[in-house]
Image (tube, helix red, strand yellow):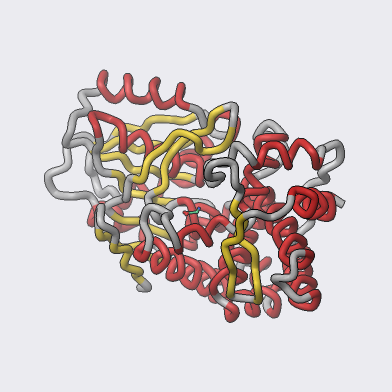
Length: 357
Ligand code: GLY
């Protein structure tokens, strides 16, 4: 059972990658917990509740539904759920189980962070993207009209239970969207993971157990290591945002409806790779192999009508923009990135245009 320690100033916990772990969920509920609130979406609950309910082994729990969809990742649904928790006698001993994809992990975690000034959350991510990224590391929050995840907090879970078997019912498009986050992990910190994705595309797309277990465990191991080194993104954790700055701009520009988060990250990585090449940080050969790897798992949905100029303007409102300076995570070789500020707008614009083409 691969179990990866995440050790932050706020909390130390494990991210456990194990087929069937949902059936053991009760073991991870602290003994003195009061009401248990499972925060999920109807879709996830319809497909995946059987294993979790069995895993809770008779522990009473309330199920609360979020609307689902990136465009509903807003503060209002959380207020509704918090009112419901109060009505159902939630208190400071309550526990949230965030059971679903990245949106549920972010929103359920944020609900736990703010309900009665903070109650524990157990993260059980059920999509590939959430298992390798959103469910681990304690980032929680919601979107504003002005940008993605602009309200939120760091609220570390008490544990993260990752069951690769839960992916068997995941739609193909969502599975591929998660694979882009894994390509990201390979490019920023693991050449072996990157090579594996390039060399074992068919096994990965066929969701063969050994391939899926390896790519998840390697990604979670890296995420756990990075978050342990830098919980609050002062330094090393920034590398996890490779592809995200451009990707968030694209999500906001397209009203959070046209692309899945992972697809937007794929676009963002393309832009960052072009930028790294034209600014001299990355060789043409390395750039090509990275772009090819992204294409191997594509294509992402068409981006016709998206304005490069609008995306450039949106970069300024990303929360990683500091006093007007946008910082980019640029790859320098497979497994290595550099944080670069002060890049000329004209170079950024042409990287966006190349990624849109
Ligand atoms: N998704 C990026 C991070 O957790 O820091």
